[in-house]
Amino acid sequence: MRKTILLDLDGTLLPMDLSYFTGRYFAALGAFMARRGYAAEPLLRAVGTGLRAMVKNNGAATNEAVFWHAFHGELGAAGEGAEAAFADYYGGEFERLRTLCGFREGTGETVRAWRARGARLVLASNPVFPRTAQLARLRWAGMDAADFDFISSYENASFSKPNPAYFTELAGKIGAAPADCLMLGNDVAEDIPARRAGMDVFLVTEWLLNRDGAPLDAYPHGDFAAASAWVHAALQ
Image (cartoon, rainbow, N blue to C red; front, side):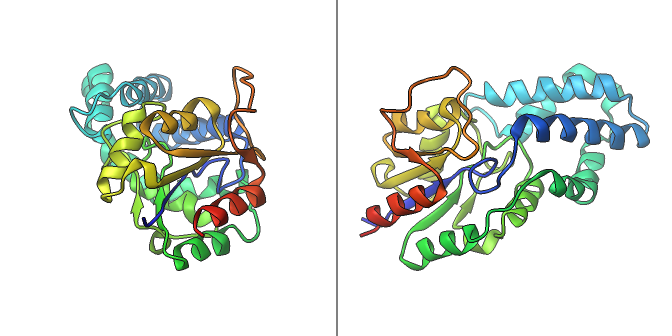
């Protein structure tokens, strides 16, 4: 069967300290929205409410719809017009955060080589960002939309990590059997649940997130070069 490779982005394809990046992302977003006339503190609280709602999404609506319902439910009239302002941010100033990330030489070439060998590629970054932000971070990692068969974003997802249903939904989007899918990620809590969806999982350890200190012996793991070798063997 044709293999499908699901790839996490932050900390897997794109080197980054997630905590460092997230803190500065929220600060930059708050500052941008303040210049648009929104009070930063309540706005960021509403963003947090929206993020939590997406993580809890049970498939009844897209993450985008769930986010904005929760966001406006908290801010009310004070959040009017925020959708357009957010779109402006992700289409412009969000690009400045590129300097907070690293770059791994050869990642794009490796991923494109997998596709050249017949694998289908899915960007399986947690779909709590709009497509614009997903594509921006993908470019920072040396790739673009043309390298992937499907890109997960809050517009097209109805679940989020760590819900195993997120991975099942992704497989269904491209007509793949979960048993024919490989998931590469760096977060024990968020990426290992792909196993419960019936997928094989490899943990990329260069920017590993293992908040609970879980032992890794039960999971294939190693740096990106080791992950590439694992995928190469699976594609034989």
